[in-house]
Amino acid sequence: MRRFFKAVAVVTVFSVCEKFLGFLYRIYLSRAIGAEGVGTYQVALSVFGFLFTVVASGTPITLSRLMTKYRAENHGERVAKAITAAVIYTLLIAVPICAMCYALGDNLSFIFADKRSLKVFFIILPGLIFTSVYSVLRGVFWGNKDFLPYSVIELLEEICMIIVGITVITFTHDRTNGALGAGVAVIVSYILSFTLASVVFFVRKGKLANPKSEFKPIISASVPITAMRTVNSLAIFLVSVILPLRLVAAGFTESQAMTLFGAAAGQAIPLLFIPTTLIGSFTLVLIPEISENYYKHQNAALKSDVEKAIKFTSVLTCFFIPVFFVCGQHIGIIVFASAECGEYLTASAFLMLFMGLSNITTSILNSMGCEVQTLLYCVVGGVFMFACIWFLPTVIGIYALLIGFSFVYVITTALNLMLLRKKCPEKPRTLKYLASTAAITLPTVFIGIVAELLLTDLLGIFFTFIACTLITCAFYGLLAFGFNLISFEIIKGKAKKFIFRKAQKA
Image 1 (cartoon, one colour):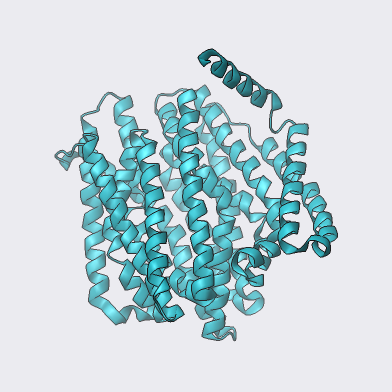
Image 2 (cartoon, helix red, strand yellow):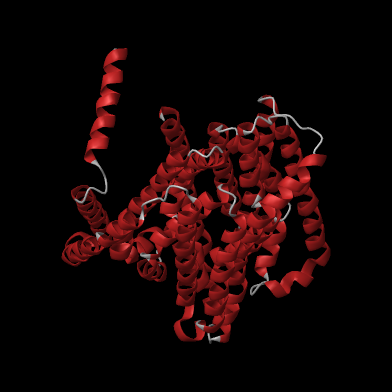
């Protein structure tokens, strides 16, 4: 258990540093190239993300699960074969897709509402090969429960992108060229992470072997996950391509449409994913444990791990909801100088709970071999998403995106929780906890609104945001302790053990 929490701590520290730097970089981009430039860059990145999803999104988790399974079944000799099969399988998809896109050239312009995005896309495109192979090596690190190299490489990739991006954008003369510079930074960072991961793999005596017998297991297990994530990415792709077009059809100019899209998708939504990002480090370490317990039929440990993951996700995301609901507009203005972003944050705050739960439950189910079911659930949510972004922009403008995401995450969360109860021999008990953590957000939001109304004129936007954040987090924490959603005894016990160990060493 000590090893588990140590791994979580390592991944969390590096992940928080990485995401914080990325957050600062996004602020820089918003101010350097504006919401319109961010929208141009975001559209290109979304199309690239869709292609990456098609190529390699299912491979890392599949490879790590197969590595865990083979070792649990004493078939360790199959691990190197599976790694090789995964690398070759990824390259056989990535290389032809890149070649086809370059061959089509300007004929791909029909995909983009703004042709400037096509130029950014072609700059990033070669990164598909590098980052796809890196994703396989990332799966190797996960399967070996070797989280430090992965965490360091991810952080260095982010630092590289920021340094190159700021350097290139500084010497540009307009926002279009600034978006191109951001694209250059992305491809350079992908090359770096690929290079570092390859070096670490071989330095740590990673091996390749004849992959012939492992193509079928890799493909059969990864295709459903890839398909599921392709549906998710397709939703983002459709949002990036169709939503600006539908906004134009609803009466907005191209510039207005890209500005609205940039404020929502490029500025607000990344902030909404902050809790999910923090949960990611916990998930990264826990998922191999869940997979191992599932295949070894350790039912009590499996039940405990599933409950631990869902409860942690619930209480953490609910800490953020009152802050974003009460101070959304302040955050938008402080961070991006965008009132539109702030309004979107406030309207989307309660969605964060379902975003986190959908992410964690999907990861758990995939680690238990339920890739086909989670794929079907995502398809259902994707259908509703598509309907929303097609029909609703004429009625509610950019908020069609919020309604679409709500359908996706609420549907997948509900269906995933029902499937988890069926798959676990010992049923996880989480519904009461979820209802309780959600319920105590309501009085916390009320306290936050009162504080915001009283303090804004007195303290100004920035200090009101700080004060309201402290007030809502403290009040939510007190309620969580009061209703025993967070156990003070556990924290007290951990603190005593820590002090005792330090005293022994002294």
